[in-house]
Length: 470
Image (cartoon, rainbow, N blue to C red; front, side, top):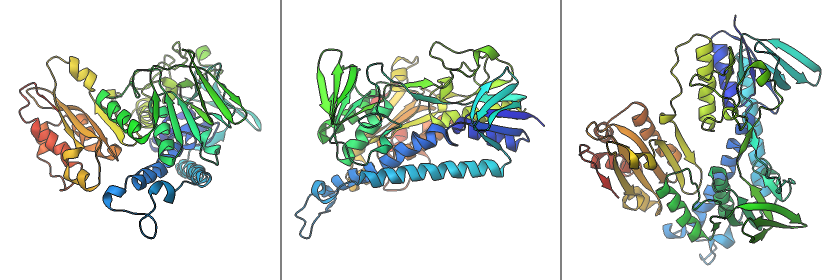
């Protein structure tokens, strides 16, 4: 029986443990902070639970067009009629995260995985030491997987205090809505929290060091989001880099490198992540790290040390829970001799949980613009979709990319409420190399927002030409 020791209980770790147990391994999972890792306890599950409440508030505030009125005679607007109890919201967030963690732990135990609570480190390539409350425990291993995740990056002159200067792991301790929240960082995490707290009713200022929000996403999609932010009164400060964040009583001041200052009641720092790889004996065991401290892995999750694999945010490979889980599964399939395909990032779908959501898969617009031969593109605004009109949706679009001549779908973008659900047909098309004609030939419900995906595919029927339509 192959002895598998996994360090880290996040998606990369617990999914690997389930696969290893399924394949007959003797599996030990060493975990420090709680099964599920940051994805379940402090990141994905909590933030998307908070965002679920924000989505309801967005719907309420934009319901006037649908004929919904508040008050006995309809003389009250949504802003005055509905408010958020943040203490109740965050209580639900933390309870749901705890229950999800417990469910995963129960599943692991039911599959025979031994869970050890402690901090793990390598003692060479074939042994893991766990520092537990009862002292050190050693575990010999034929296969080791490192899945220790990452933690929020802290600016030297912006140290969180957990009360008014916060990282995204600390916001769930708030019991009152911030009067004015300054979000530093306009990547996915910053944009999501800015959008959510704006919907919950806080005044929000988003400090972006780049020309636009979400610099790594589709430019058309980012522009839609900026337009929505502007309409809803959310302030975006572009090309503004934070130099320091200080607190004086109930006032937080963000000083920018150009000398400007922004004051508010709270500040949320969303300026990147640092891998949890320090002090683990990795380099001593022959595991190569890059300059940022991330573990270098190949497409089957192998590190530079024989028998040692790594998965998840500690590798810096497209830091998504879904990718971490797949890296962990691939590692165990490879290590235990099952059929395995290398990780293919070209078929990964991802989503930004703003309002509206932004979902992408496959080739990006930036890649399509320089592709040779030229990639065919169709972009359809949601305003022309019947279901979108019924729901009062005015912002967003679908965009589909296909290869010339063959018409194979190579990418797509959806900007809409629930884009995370709508991207799935395009994800299937990209991963299975379906053509636009095959997508167009599939039935969609009428009326439905997904009908725009089929319509975009139909408009790409003449894929032998280099089309670009808006």
